[in-house]
Image (cartoon, rainbow, N blue to C red; front, side, top):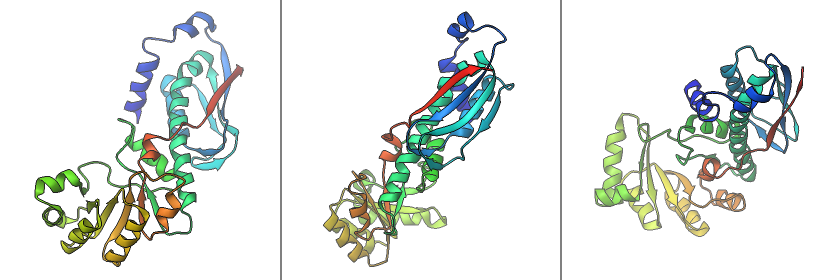
Length: 272
């Protein structure tokens, strides 16, 4: 995490905060209030604190809200110490906090939308480059679940793989053989015929790609408990519950990380 913070600070602060050096008296002390300004899940306080401490270890931090807690507008944290240091760290700290809180908040809304159905909300690899680890933690903070972290810790046979392997059946057999040592294997299917083919080849995890509700229900019936089914593709807050009610066990939502709006957070500074 520190390497990521250092890159972000280098991008923003560079050789120094010219404005603060010009107008903020050297040695001035200040206290800042970090505020959550809209309803949502606050997540990323530990990262924000690390940003301030990376700028100046002398800064004092006090969190007023627990990580991952849902709430309305409120005081999130306070930081006190050298004023120039607080101002230099402000934007990077708020960028992390707002972004991660936005992911956690959108995830929590999806989780609430399917409550009581038994379906789980999962993330995807559609993450911000370099931020995947933090964004996936934010998904968990919002009540969602993580899938494979990358290409190296799980097998997902997608349409291009199947085409290159000679079809769903052949790709499934090859993937299951490769994953026999304990690597999870999932097979993507875009039609009910492909679902039948994957099941016949022994697939126990199937991703149902962009299927209509009646197709999802039919797939659940055809699997008959032989495979865990995941609906994926274009699921929104408005459609998530209907998708969950088809009987699929998992719903993956790329929007959790590629389209979550940042939660509105801000910093107000006063003399100490």
